[in-house]
Length: 280
Image (cartoon, rainbow, N blue to C red):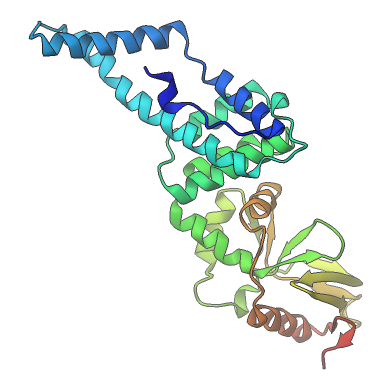
């Protein structure tokens, strides 16, 4: 095997260099890898020379081509991850078990868009070791592309808490667009990314400050219902919120989304102000 063929692209940044070193060390070929590579080379030479080849040996070494493809996918994801490595990253503190689990799943990912998500998962673990659960890696390994697109679609309805990192997914199932259906939401719930309650809404209490774009929403609870703020039928799990934070870092502001959310709160007898001005 030509090790240079799938080597990690170098970068002058210290944190990225450390990251590259960790990944390169992880993929350092073992003596068995080198022996298999040499055997594969010998088979080709024997075939060219017209020599008889043991079928059992051919069967064993034919899997090597598949192995190389999987290695290239892993290295492609690692190279993409470099773009998101922060100066404070601690790649040396990534658990070897975590890396083993990660690349065992990532080696099967061919789609470029999905590889980018995997790259962000890897970079986040390097930036903040211990923050990406293996459960999220498992979810990503079984998630279909259309499910990933749907997750991105519902993420349009996320508002962030004012001056906090918390985010809230505001899906009001009886009053949302036709593409957001209970069955599709249940699919994401089975993947462990969201929780749904189609009978009762999740609740904020008293008052809530949320942001959307450059708008700050102040929401006052229903005075006729113990100042409760009914906030839709869907919430993120930890894994769902983590995935959202990685793939929706710069959500586009859309006035129709804001108008929709304001209308839903008002229809639930909540008083609402936007940038200090009450919406009547």
